[in-house]
Length: 228
Image (tube, rainbow, N blue to C red; front, side, top):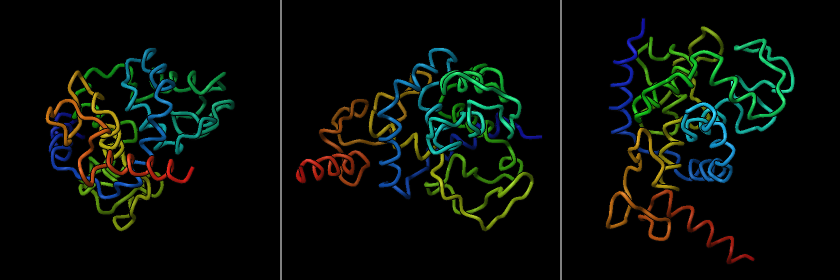
């Protein structure tokens, strides 16, 4: 049996020590998610689940495909065949997302602890607690950070310790989103880790720290405008 309090404590410690290892990739994905945050915010208003967590799940479950359900990546306009099976069809991506968060385990709409540690644990339970049962970092969270090297469930109940998850994990994406928008917070606390601004709680892409994701995005935008 996994102790969720212990898991939250472990995730808090990993978050405190986490650094991105795939910064450019994380910046690109975070920017793609951030551009459509209004759709995630619409689901947040109906469920209470913070929009960055919804965005992370959408990326992990279906690489942000809008024709795929947040629950498991199956088409939302048909009855789902993967767990949770038998859901749908739905009229929209948003309707399917609300169903996934309100009516499907682990029922994230009922989750009360939206501190960063609680949010990370909620994301991990959304994927499953198989990694926690093995006392190893979940790639669903930590892929793309220094907290993860290898190990992945390649199918239900089959764990390959040498398999590397190619997707970015939720923690990596939250870190990248926070560098795009330092006002992103969980339980009222900003999660941005470090910025160049003289006020550490107010960072801006107009003055990003050298080597940060913000600097990468600014340089990317400048390069695009130079070519046009």
